[in-house]
Each structure stands twice: as structure tokens, then as C-alpha cells.
Image (cartoon, rainbow, N blue to C red):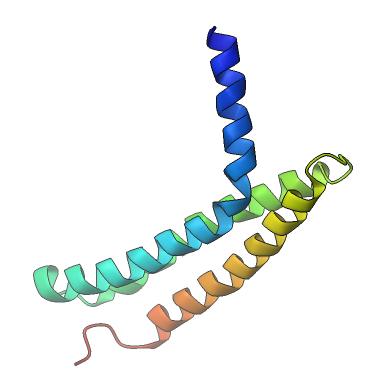
Length: 113
């Protein structure tokens, strides 16, 4: 029974894995806005905002890059090729969005009114 549940969980993860890029971008976006609010209102240390966003962005970039490498190795499989390509496209778009989020957080002053 445990094996059957594990395969069901693995199938579910694999079928939803193509959403990993947008979910990671949303997490970076949330970290950017949440850290801006917390750093400026509670901690009053604007220098931390860029570090928090850069750290979250680097983690997300590494996770997406690992997913893209794994997807590239599995590109020969014919089953699920559409979702794999769609996921890879979303991953690349998410990398661009994460880059824009990080650049805005690092270039614009934090806690500016």
C-alpha cells in the first residue's frame, strides 16, 4: 500500500511540476513585498531588504535551473512532452520575472516614501 501511495504522490508531483517556475517566482515576489513591509515598518533597516530579496531570488534561480537540467535530460521521453516543454517555457519566463524582481529590489531605494 505504501508503494502505491508513493507512486500516486510521485505522479501528482510530476503532473504539477510544470508549475514550479511560476510558484517560485511568486515566492520571490512575496518575499520582496513582505520584506519591504517588515524591514521598513518593524526593523527600520532598509539595507536588509536587498539581501533578503537577493537570497530568495538566488535560491529560486538554483531550483529552477536544477529543474531545467532535469527536464533537458528527460526530453527524449515522448509521454508528457507537451507538459515538459510548457514547464520549461514557464521556467524560462519565471527566470526573467525573478531577474526583474531582483533588479528592482536592488536598484530602487527601500523604504522610500
